[in-house]
Length: 512
Image 1 (tube, rainbow, N blue to C red):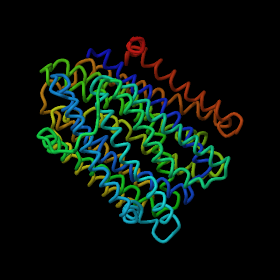
Image 2: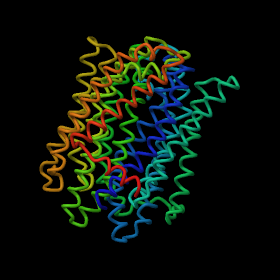
Image 3: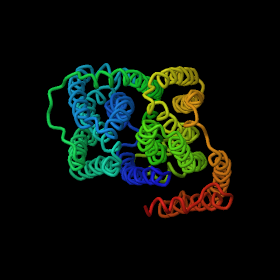
């Protein structure tokens, strides 16, 4: 895959992910308007985070990072990739069914582990009820992640990137119906969670069948290939567990401040836009590409893929990070400020957003650097690095909580992200030429940083001028659009002038 085709893959996944995030913003705006940061909102966010936490533990992060390189190599060499994927599918499905039942039985303990601050008030009972309904989502979405790995490894990115739009659309429909028919909003959202899982699984299943793969039922069995997959995946599963411990620590800290879990969730949704569009897109495309290059002993191709992935990621992530810090308050106020939303919600959510924004480049670089290890089937070192980042996160979140309150959770997450990137970078220095930065990257990165800082200055000045409009209900959307448009124009304009990137590269990738 030439660099231009690699960027095309990034843009394909990123473009569909952008569509999903935009629809997701509509969902979050509606939830903020109807629920605000009250008890029902906090209970639902905790309940919904449980299947999503374990999904990253089992599938998207850990299992898939081991599965995709093995499947990609079998696909390239013709060593029965379909049989291997089918065994993995039904084996994972069996484990997930048992785990889902166990999780539902232990739901009160899971809620307590996520948010001990809920104990003794209505949020705890609500979270347990919502959790019992929504937890089966882990079964469906984890199988979706495996099927998506099959499609991504064969260069088919559209279906898997587009599926999340379906989930957000179903949530929007559910919120609209609940408001019109006077259904309990929290319970409606909880029931919508497993419905979206079933819908996503059906769509992905059809896409896999159209790609020529059959996943007819096969009795689960521990084949030599699955045994090897389990051995490779085990450290990644543990590393994924460490990452989720970081999230648990953050939620525990936040649960002792009323409304804080909701503030962190809404801030998370905002910074997940650039993270999803850029970081996840790069990670999805880069892992199978690096796996193929390393199998073919194409060191130059692997180095080019890594460098172009890092360059593309930072060219879009650094300006996004600057924007999240500089215009955190206008973004939060305009997007969420209606209905049950209060000024306190705006201030606290914007604070969390700015802190997350400082960590955004780290979160994206994590997606760029980690495939260097997993493409080599090295899952042990990322696990050790994740352990260290967990210690950093816990120490900061718990240690700073008495001083800065709920913001300690966001700060711990951000600094732990940078600690993880530092370790991945140092560890990759032993991988030879394929993991080295090339002259083009070294030349452009400082220009990208300069363009991003120039954009930040323009946004700050424009924010002062547009301040009155941003506070007017009838004009605030136009003012925010002008602010964002100015940011885009100033960044890409300055970047083009100083040679940070060539717009022709992006246009060529889109045409292809």
